[in-house]
Length: 278
Image 1 (cartoon, rainbow, N blue to C red):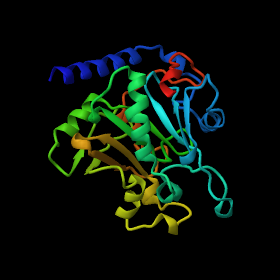
Image 2: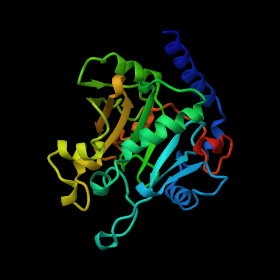
Image 3: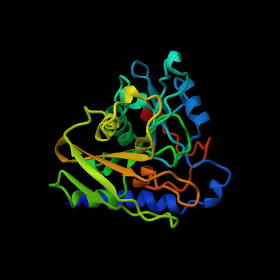
């Protein structure tokens, strides 16, 4: 119990520290690395000054996000077969995310959440204090598939623990955007990440990604997150928010389940920890 209290206090200290940083630093900067920044991270990952590690055999890199001291990103470096249309794998709406040879969620957990994140934190969180997130195309800053890796809000961990013995349930975490109602996530407990959550999403809708060049709206307007569960299991959180149109924005941003980083600035070197990626 003492360990749990200490971990929660540590997470809250991170949040408190980040929220008092001058908000003026946000002006003129993206809330995350833009697509050009992601492509640059992929191209120059081996630079010894980069906080980045390449996994060439599986077509991705893990790099430090510019948001705060702890968030990392798995960025997919794979391209479509030119015969099927050239370009990056875009995101949750891209069929290759589900039908490709690499299960990026499993890789993000095993390489990012279990190895790199504890090095950035300098302590090891409990499984249900760590989350992975992919935003919908209507609520993201870069159209190259990337998975956010970070500690989740203490309220998210508490909500999941309250349903510790349930296979499926709903949670409504805190939400800070006054434009919309807090999203309610459908949560499914799974034994492992051996089945790609992207593929499982398609299958729940009775769809096969290999039969599509672009995902139907039911896939494209979804945001997914994964949080560790006890006994080596996982919680998969899904929210289908609808298309954002400016007047009725869709909260397709499961990254907000993770701790909020007040200072997100492209090119900011304040939190460089290159040894975490070696």
